[in-house]
Structure formats: C-alpha cells, structure tokens
Image (cartoon, rainbow, N blue to C red; front, side, top):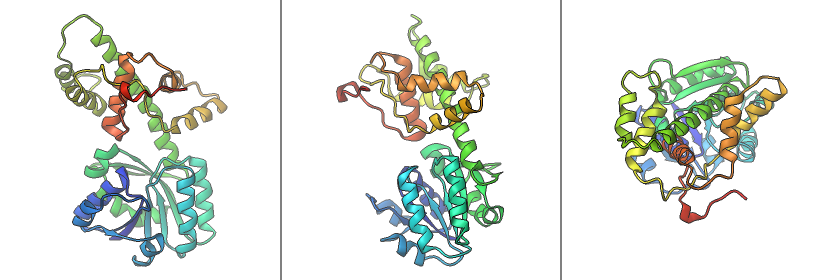
Length: 306
C-alpha cells in the first residue's frame, strides 16, 4: 500500500522504515526534518509540504500523524481537513487526549473524511521492529488500514480495534498510567538492592529475573540493559522527563471517583523536587530512556525543578 506519515521523529521515522522494509510505499513529511539519508536509502519518499504529501497518494488516501499532542496535532489536522477528500483516512498515532480525538472524529466526518485514534505502544524499538496498536474510530476505516498496521505490529495480537472514537487513545493513556506505576516500582526496588550492603551483580540479577520469575517483563529486561550501560549512577540527574498525559487519566479518575493510589503516587514522584542522589529516580530516568527514548540528564546540566 501507499500511505503517508506526517511527523518523522523517533516514532514516525522508525515506523516509516519498518513499513518500507515490508514493501509498502511511504510518503513522509516533517517540517523540522533533520537527517534524511536513512529514510531516503530505505525508499521513503520525502514530501516538501503537506500538499505534496496528499497529492502524491492515490485515493482513498491514508495519512498517519505522529506529532506531539496538543497544538501541533491540531495544526496538522486542520491543514489535512482542507487538503483531503471524502473517503480519505486520518489516523492520529500520538498520545492525544481522548476527548480531543472524539471531537476530531466529528470534525473530519463533516467533510466525509474518516478518523482513527491509534494508541501506539512499544517505544522506539517497537516502532522499528513491531509495535502494539489500539485503535478507536470508524470500523470501515480500520478495516482499510488494518493490513498496514498488521505489518507494522508485533506478531500475534499487536493490532486491536477497541471501539468508538476516542477509545484507542483512552486505553493507551490508561496503559501509560499502569506503566508509570510499574516503572516507579522497579526504580524503588533497585534502590533497595543498591543500598542493601550486598555486593550484587545487578545486570546479572535482572537477567535472572527474566527467566521464570513472577516479575519478568520487558521493563525488567530494559532495566538490566540500562544497568549494563550505566554502572555509575553518580553523574546522573534525578530529573525525569514527563510528557504529562497520565495527568489526564488521573484527573478523569478523580472526577469519576475511582481511586488510583499507586498511579497517583508514581506521578507525584516524577514531579517531586528530589535529592540528586536518589537512586530510584535515576533508575526511572534510565528506564524511560530505554523504552521511550526520553533523554537522561546529568548533574552537570544543573536541571532542577523550580
């Protein structure tokens, strides 16, 4: 199939490369595009504008959007609304608020354009080798896009149609909330190990836990990798990048009277002005770098919350 991807950052570019390897024709656009060599070498066609991206594809056009949530996504959607035709499909693969996605479904429907909200999980590694997709929106549009998603997803259940507009982004943000609790727990457990007084080979221990233990998981595996690459925590800052989407889930949970103590505390831990030597916070920062490509700061950078 031939389709477009708007936004060629960490996620969009790796999905484009994965699709090209599977034999799809990808047209990509990013107004801030940096290095183009790898994309062009893989056969990705780079458009000079959104207009060029749209006109280079056959109808019905399929355009995936992988730009930051909020104003950037809104700007791209409004531009596409004026460029696409009835029957075309816009698929937002970012972490947009589910209510925004519901509104965009109606906004595009007025012009006969179909809209999908696609929660995308698996981080940068998943985008390159097989991601997990949770899709909400128009069922007929999903059926048209499903073959592409199947090629971009991990085998054995990586594509799931969740339901009505907004559902894909809602379940992805709940997924992220669960992730926060798990990551914080691993970070705190690591601090217990490092302060135990025992001389532990931590990468080897985490590798051991990947073989049959109750807590074996990709996050435990990634923590082992991060420990192998960062034997000395001293230079690391405890400043943890937070893109803010989990706060939306927590606000909704509070308004709906649903208690979420673990997730709430993990969000608070990210926002706390911490002691720079707090090992659990450094572990969380390393883990978020491993699965999401979020930067790991160092003490020398002087990053502290005001």
